[in-house]
Amino acid sequence: MQKSSFLSAAIAVFSREARQELRRRTTVASVLFFALAALTLIAFSITTLAIAPADRSRLDSGMLWILLFFSAASGLPRSFVREEETGTALALRKVAAGETVLFGKLLFNYLLFLAICLAAVPALCLLQDWTIQRPAAFALALALAGYGVTMVSTFLSAIVSRAGQKDLLFVLTALPLLMPLLLPAVEATARAAAAAGDLSPYWKVLTAYDGLVTCGAFVLMGFVWEG
Amino acid sequence: MPQFEARSVAKSFGGPPIFRDVTLLADRGLVAVTGRNGSGKSTLLKIFAGLLRPSSGRVEISSGGAARPPDRCRRLVGWSSPEVEFFDELSGAENLHLLARAAGLPCREEDVRARLSQLGLQRAASRRIAEYSSGMKQRVRLAFSLLADPPILLWDEPFSNLDEDGTARGMAAVEERRSAGLVLIATNDRRDLSQPDAEVVLS
Image 1 (tube, helix red, strand yellow):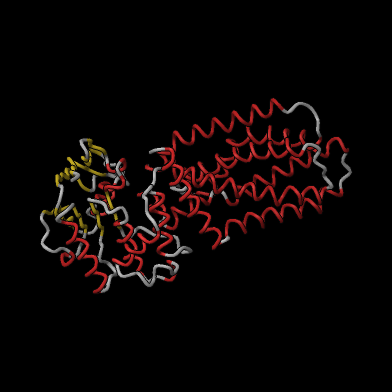
Image 2 (cartoon, rainbow over the protein chains, first blue to last red):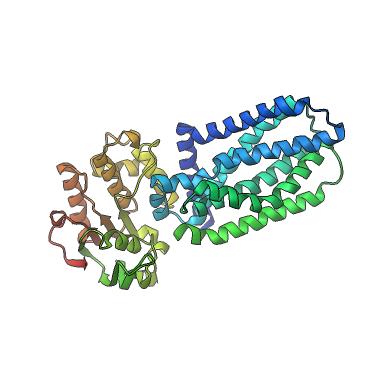
């Protein structure tokens, strides 16, 4: 398939996903509800603790990633699972190659992840009185690590969608796969927020992880999609 | 005209094969796929459509001097099955238009509406699929299979849930295509078939 037709087909998959979600609103609502519930719990528990200012940034960063990971885990796995459960995957499988579908759904899920960030980060900063010293570096860390989380979640969703015990299988496989990404992500956002130290090693790790999972997912997607 | 070729196709899902040694070589006409419940008619059509891999044997479509498996030439094969579902939140026209674009077809929404009109859904094209009856959904499935105007058409139980008008429109599409291409119909109801040119019987 040519580059332009691959892109336009992937954009069609994205539009199908987005239009459906705009009318259904179940994924966005469940993800945002989870994020809101987690933020409220954080606001009422952690803020009362006496924590040294030096540790605050790392704690807030850790909480942010817990919130982002579980919010994403409550919504992103649905992308392929819902298609299989409702029988709509067959029509899509008939017309489009796996790589096209993966790219279209990845695009939608990444925008959803960025939307969660847009809602969660200002809310957390407000509730925790958290000041981000280097906002551009902080945003870059979120964007790079968020891409990795989305890529892995979308691909795993395709794998588990045709298995039994989908939700359990997703969490059990996602966590070990995402650990090598989440640990440097927590550290990078903490350092960016506190303007502490050199961030270049983290950019290398996050970019390498993103590149690796992207290559792996696109190479394997044909086998997953066509069975 | 593309040549459809299936040689010694067999399929099993771990146990004994549900069918074996299915061979078909055709480029036009109407082919009936018949057999009792569970004989594998729907499975065979999925293999022919490139949605399932055969356990043994091969399926190829020759076109323009190249022979390719059906999942490598999706636009040449239209497929409809009662198992196909569409997004409830979108209209019939939206569902088909987005699927056509995902297939890489240079297809405008007007073209999709024309296809739906062919199946008698012109007035329902903008309504959400959730509001469709089972017969209307079946018409959308048939329209879906015709989107790319494919020379090879695989229809699994095409007239189930259809009223007289829907059946007549479906039959008309079959008659229109059997002289210019290949139509395979899997069915338990012989009334669905108007004098097939060949028959594949699964036992």
